[in-house]
Image 1 (tube, one colour):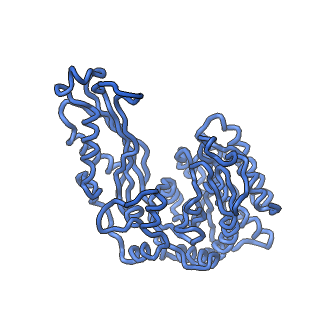
Image 2 (cartoon, helix red, strand yellow):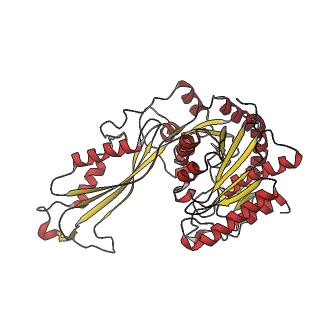
Image 3 (cartoon, helix red, strand yellow):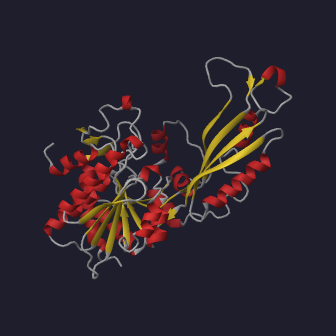
Length: 444
């Protein structure tokens, strides 16, 4: 395809910038340097900055104090591409077919952030921008943005802005404009159940010694009632009810319960009564078992009573629920329900708070207007079920809200083999960038 915009994106995608794998540290640096050069060619002052981990890239237009400042956030690191054999074409040799770009990072997040970079570059060729622009493109989003909070604090003045724009979320339906105004938080935990000092012969000891695998199953079963409502005491105490306009927005969204069932590959959905699937996903907290193990896992039978078992959990949280407070409640629940004859060890994992933006704020209205202008229809307003913990850091440290304007299609296969990005979404993202900056200039 002879389109300079697309050719540059393909060049960007060829970097195997996998932050999780130490063998790609050199590729990470080369990708950051490539971004710096691109931003400089576009007319911005740009540099790669050490973070203590992979470098972050900052690019900015000269600051005019009479204009509002928009910070555009994205990331250049990508998920590991394994298993390679499940890709139709090699993950770091991007291909164009069927109107889409196929390759690792095409949607998450190189394609989306490059649409914004291209939009700014093209607008600068036409004259001064209506706002000051800062790009912050980090290299550790896929490994939890470990160094981002410290980086934001140490570069607070340089990154000072009026509002933040991010395209790292999904559209409600293919080609459908979407503003995500809320995301769930997350809190992780692993519980290990131990009993005897070693695996025991189940015939000799079964019925006389508690089985840790059975105890783990009982603890897991204690988490929910038959309808999927979480049974941890105090779990729902801080949960806000849905406002009438939120229920109306959820009902108006182009994605229905049947679509979610089809995407998930199930015949029937399940969850709390009184809520649609889209409401459960975005506005209700959950306790989910992500993994469970213990005992013999090989071929055939091995009649043992295992010495230990474990299960891994994540709690998806909604605004006003504190990750630490929820983990406190969960730990108390498991200790209260621990069966006799076994002991439990609890290890806490990562966490991040939920995010909520009023889509009826001046900036929210500006973003909605920009989306409608570019895509030709009123945008869906969504509460997403996933988590982006960095949004809390951006708000707490920079003191600004983030506008989540989606460019990812529902079938983009982010984090999976055959990740892809519709060419039209990329081109629409360029138009959206220009329209968004123009409308944010006068939003306050």
